[in-house]
Image (cartoon, rainbow, N blue to C red; front, side, top):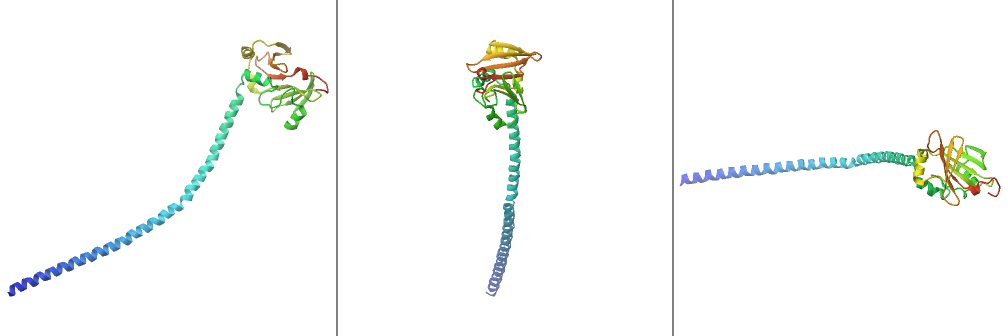
Length: 235
């Protein structure tokens, strides 16, 4: 009986030690979890400012975007320059002879809104400014706008009767090209070393191609209104 009591006591002590050890482990685990939680919290807190800093870096990305937008206008400028180059390329292309005829039927030359027989020179002068040079020639007065490549003939009544274009793109045309499109000229004339080929496009206007013998290419074209080519005040 005494031996049994000793065994029971020993078993109880062992159980108590085990329980105490388990309790200590539990406390240690709780303590570790508690320490881990602040670390996690700290990590979250530390990550949050980073996140906030990253959010704060958004203006940098916006600034980059702004720089991109500043680059974009440069690109737009490049595009604009490319557009301008394209336009210059179009301007340098030879207009079709059919287009010249269509314009001539309205008394016009390419790139000019004013028409022979309709426009008055003083209106053009008010719009374009003084001509680079003015001289009497033939049946009227001719005003040259050199930078525009345009010369305008008008009578004493200020009515325009001759619109001439010296545009470089027209100077690619040869009489062979013209004849293929329009056939033989209605009239031909010679002025010094220049051959003049005249096509009657309607009852009001003539389209003239002035071609130096030396080049065989157009020097200039003229949209001419014969009935207005009078040296009088009535126009």
